[in-house]
Amino acid sequence: MEEEEVILLDYWPSPFGSIARIALAEKGTNYIHKLEDLSSKSPLLLEMNPVHAKVPVLVHKGKPICESDIIIQYIDEVWKNNFSLLPSDPYQRAKARFLVDFINKKVHESSVKIWMGANEEQEKGKEELIEWSKILEEELGDKLYFGGDVFGFVDITLVPFYNWFIVFKTIANFYIIETECPKLVMWGGRCLNRHSVSKSLPTKDQVYQAYLEFKKGWTHGQ
Image 1 (cartoon, rainbow, N blue to C red):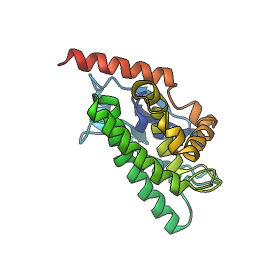
Image 2: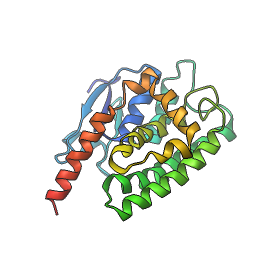
Image 3: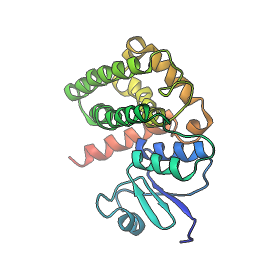
């Protein structure tokens, strides 16, 4: 492994992997993309993340950086490129970190209920996700992005989950998001049109196919 080499250990349907890909694309950082088979994890993944053995892992100069929110902050500090993904104001930066934690916990947990659950659990996930989305829409307000006019930390974290929301319309009739959170839907469309996002996210058809494959495997495993 060369000293300056940048490697991303990733799993393509993962929203957390997408977060790392978007941040790297925003900074224009070149990297080697290594996709993992999570049913047979590579020796490199087990070496670089022995605690959790999860993706994504950013490997820079032979050293691992784990967890998507930590990876974004590392990327922002190492590849400055005259702009920052995090707010410069300490309060706004702290607020962004709070929102990212909220997304990674609340939005992710409720999304998993819709993705994996059946009937009652799926409905509960939808109710929760609308509640969390309303909170996020209130925070967004009339701004273009969560950081104002600048696409950044919170946007990068949320948009991969918003990509799931689109598929939830098909698998769980999640059209209520359009009427309950119209500003968030407009924000989502704006983000999806960014080159760094569109090149980094799986398409809705790919996400749907991943869902079908997951459900097939889950059913056969019962």
